Length: 130
Image (cartoon, rainbow, N blue to C red; front, side):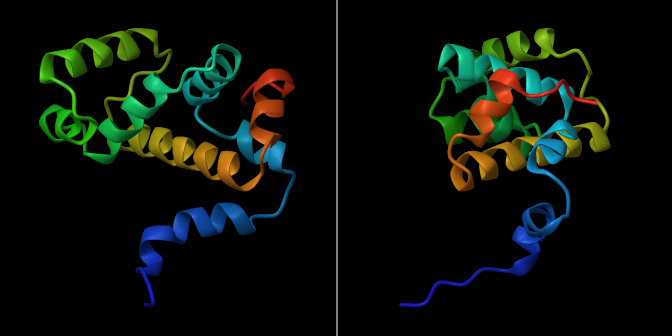
């Protein structure tokens, strides 16, 4: 059985993957709040906040769809999101901010899958985001 998908769905990831430059440089270009959350999750071994934010952004910031996808009570999700939003240094009120954050999370996920250990090395010792 052949599985195929639209290239459009993976175009940004393809562009990230084929971009020239050092991998650490590409990671440093990620949203500063995402970099901070990745660093904290690598130190603490917890990905719940980042995953919640990712699903929320993928669902166009819809609490209802996000809570359904995460199998969470809506109030639990709202509590988590409030904590996450309170920790963000940069608000994600505009579409470009949300897109930048979502793109950064996707890039971090790609690096975690494709380059085992690189993301953790970056998170624990890499340079600060630009």
